[in-house]
Amino acid sequence: MEKILEVEGISKNYPLFQLKNISFCVQPGEVMGFVGRNGAGKTTTLKAVLNLVHPDNGRVEILGREFLGHEAQVKQQIGYAVGGISYYKRKKVKDIIAITKTFYDNWDDAECAHYMAAFKIDGSKKIMELSEGMKVKFYLTMALSHHAKLLILDEPTSGLDPVSRDEMTVIFRKLAEKGIAILFSTHITSDLEKCADSITYIKAGELVASMKKDDFIRRYEAEMGMRPTLEDIMVYIEREEVEL
Amino acid sequence: MMTKLLSKEMKLTASPLSYVFIAFAAMTMIPGYPILCGAFFVCLGIFYTYQQARECDDITYTVLLPVRKRDVVTAKFLFTVIIELISFAICVALTVIRMNAMSDAVPYVKNPMMNANVAYLGFVLLVFALYNIFFVGGFFKNAYKIGAPFIIFCIVSFFAISIGEALHHIPGLEYLNGTTGMDKVQIVILALGVVVFIAGTLLSHKISTHRFERIDF
Image 1 (cartoon, helix red, strand yellow):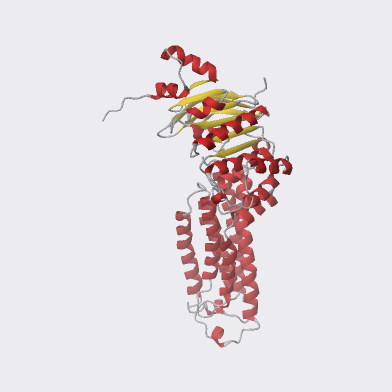
Image 2 (cartoon, chains in turn green, cyan; image 1 turned 30 degrees about the vertical axis):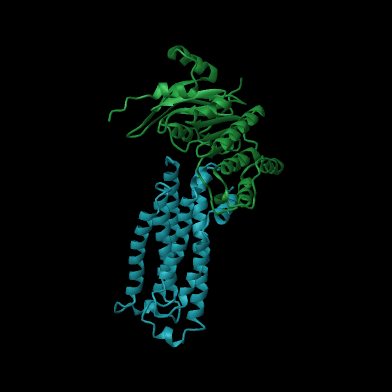
């Protein structure tokens, strides 16, 4: 099947942290959970995918094009959102949309109105007046309004209450059914149980696994001698002795 | 694309203070005051936009738009230069008024400070050039830190303003403060201001673009 995102051998050296040879790929309509503890390198990897961080090695191909060299064209077809961030917090939603839409060749006003209504976003509100969940929905609306085929979401469910998180996972599934690929980082494994098709797990900058969720669980089922949840697996992988 | 980015700078990113502080160009009319401070305050107004850009994660938002990174830098320089040129145009108009219609006004004739004349306009451009080089160029080292570049600009602009205010007090250089006509040396100072402004801004833009492409956000 055609790959929508292919990441191959991304490495990045910092004085106190190394991202080592990260590779994975995402198919259309796939929801991939990008999992790891805080500080494991999830955000660095996502930023490297988008060339916000310059990897020392590796390559990124999105929709069949090398990201480097076709950055502006590729960004026409992807959306990016970060949980817990407020762009232009004193500006109104409709004012941000009015400016943002001018940059996209495929901007669809009807689609924008559709998602604004579906997510119950009030265009006259300022960003600072939106709840964290509404902010993520707003960023999704902007991405979906230019028909993004790939959504890269960094901790989109962090800071959301359980109901909003559940709602977000339902949204992700519905978008995946429309063929949109979603790569989202999180350390909240219960969200992945509900909506992820595949898991890419990194620990201390190294890739532990990138495979279908069921295969991932089966792999650890044998090792752990039980049918584990993703949380059980995460604790199993990450557990360290605490010496006080 | 540049029109869209510039529009985004003006409507989304800009602090209203950047526009309001253009009014400080009117300090050109104040007698007995170091009127070059007006140029400094115009720069301070632009500084608020960079401060707001940082607080609103404007840089991250902008680089994720379907644009080239170097265009992000160019749009910020264009916004800065437009504010400066509007302010400069006001300075020119008011200087013409002071040199002609108000040349005999007693407060201006007895003005111990720098007069609004052709040399003054050269120094205004010098202050703007220093802002573009030291503050805007400094900002694009990491597109985050604004304090250190602004302090450096404050120091160098203080020296530039002091030199402008001091020169005409040196015996033999009194003509630098003259307002009666087009003094040749004053014209040279204006020409130098134009050259430093254009060359300094272009060089700062080139260095900033190079730096911005390499930043890890």
